[in-house]
Picture (cartoon, rainbow, N blue to C red):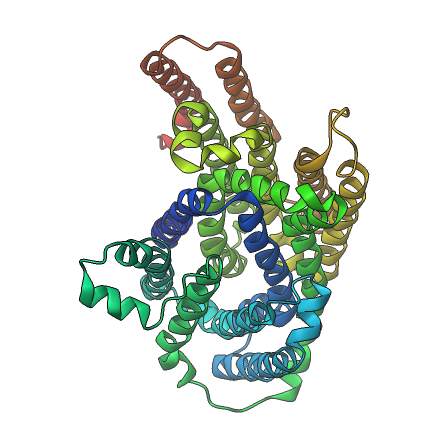
Length: 499
């Protein structure tokens, strides 16, 4: 099969599950931002920020190590069993220790009255860690439909339980006439709980994922090959640091906002920032779907003689797509997306959205470029690049967050610019170093041309604001047509077969 069509097909299948799953997940944001105050929603994001960091520690790069050795080793069952046994042991050890130390951990996090939050998240993390390699194996086997089905089921359970606990149960309790349903709900529903039901829903959905993957666990041979494990750990160890540094870049700004700002506004600002961060839904959906498909594809494609040409062409199509996603989101932001997606209490954070959209675009390009150190087994470079990004993130956040409101950059606006600069720097450094160790002739003219055009057209939409929502809709749609027309004119010669 044509490699571009193969990657596009795999991305489409993963994209269906990612798009539907993310849409279901992101549809909860309007619910959360209307049911909970920014301070309460900020608490939710604080715990998920810690969880993102710990998930990297719990999986310690074994997912990517599995892809690497699954392609190179003849005995694929040995690779799968060795990786899984390692993860099972470390995950269960983490679960036991966290349950035993739940109270002191909750106290250290300033949630001493809620040690149950710590235990719930320990369970979520372990369930998610145990599903990583089975999911990776499905991707390596090209079983995208099964992957998507299990993933969607889990997300659907989480979405349904959120609606059940946060909307349906309170509604039933308000209607005494529904005596049977009312009595049933009162058996288990706690009216003093709020965000707790977000966490409980995740506990159940993560458990469902593991249950659906039981056939994959039954395929284990339960044979731990020490040589194989040592090779996988050596390969994965730098990725652990890269992942930890990457999570610092992705989520620590919310934690730093909480601890660097005055306590009376800290959690409130975390809530505002987190809700506006979610607006990059289309960008994150595509990048995630692409990443699911691209990683195993790149490893498999490396065996072909024209692999580097394929990587360069894929980058062209990638930048076209993410530039278009950026433009679509930004031109329809004020009239449609903001109004429908988040509650009015969160609109004050609108200014960070274009900054974060471009930051996530740069992150997607970085994922695309990062294949060079995975293919060449120079994973330590991945760690160094992520560590540099983490240092930039921390320095800029510590510098900008605490500044007073008389400064142009402060609070969550400082966090947004720190994210932008971090991902831009990582992208540039990965390109420069990668060209030394694994040169690929990326088309920089198309890269800067398409991205620059998208930013320019967004600027036009920001400064030319016609009266009337429908008039603005037509005008903004014409801007999208202009972008598509320019892309078509430049790409048509490459798509037309030469005679």
